[in-house]
Length: 288
Image (cartoon, rainbow, N blue to C red; front, top):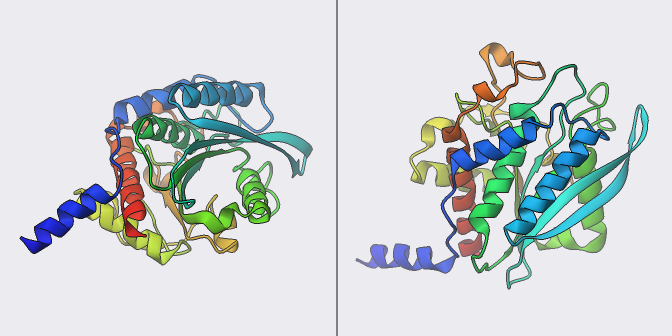
């Protein structure tokens, strides 16, 4: 009885959320893909940005467009991170991120790589709307994750590097409890990387949340290490985690090819990741 009472009180300690719809997240992804290839600086990416901003505002989110110049091997490019804020009362923040640009490749529409993260973040906004919060929840759509030419520290992660530096300068990083980055999470054969470069504390919290929800098969504990949009925040001391399925197609054969299309994705995968992220937010808010 004592344990049951504690569990009941813990459930009340953090705000609930509306249910996460994998079908709706898939539909948002489909709309992103319909714009075609969306590399940095392209008209298609700007049209997707406008759609993201409009959709977030309709869900009652406080939206900011973080404009900056990315210095690429092809010269300076105007880039835009989109930041959605659901305000809380503690001054602390939980940040969920993902990129919405696609790699510069012929006929590459990036359904999973660039599309699925945007779709999941948009559905998270829908699930979080109208719910009083303890902590700020920030959803960030990064521009410029993909390299313009060869992946290097200087040619990649433009949006996350910029925002980590900006938030370090203005004090925002000090408010962040945890950051969770999502990337390539729509694969119908979902198996997420147990990323050893990520914060062990956040990784344990998220994997425990997945276990509690019955999703252990999608969250194995086979260690790997990934460089993604969480890394600039880790480098500034933020507790950050990358959620990515980096085994996309036989021997990862769909990654960065024209085969990265909507038919390779499944609503169930979005639902699994979305519900785990919402449970992780609840646990982070309840913890401290």
